[in-house]
Image (cartoon, rainbow, N blue to C red):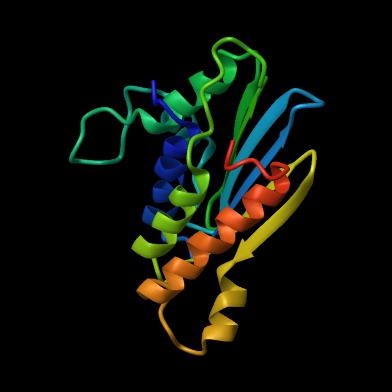
Length: 186
């Protein structure tokens, strides 16, 4: 089992990159009041058939040749379901894929979210030609980082430039502190 859900996000988002996505949307919605955490990763990649979706959920199937077993999606599914939550993949060929995991936050088997901000920054750093939209919502508010907006302001400066990555880190940290009520992360 992955020790942090942000690592599952990294794994699924890397699947989106491999699926030739140009836009990956990562949405984290959480509520202490309503006792849930929902993570959704959507892309405009090549998509999958229903048969391929079933294979992706199977822990003993992978399209990768470097590893015999693809555990990323099955572990993501298990982590949600073991809290009494749910898991869903919707995909359409040549349109894209959306993966959604919903958790019961108070469940004893709830895996911590982990450093989702760092995960998003690393995804942007490693895939500077792909656009990412990251939205994080809590009971106290919401914020969005959209690399398409950054590109418009940066006028050709690459997203993996150290100064840009430093700004992204600071922005994500500052916004997270606001939506967590001043607390430093989760």
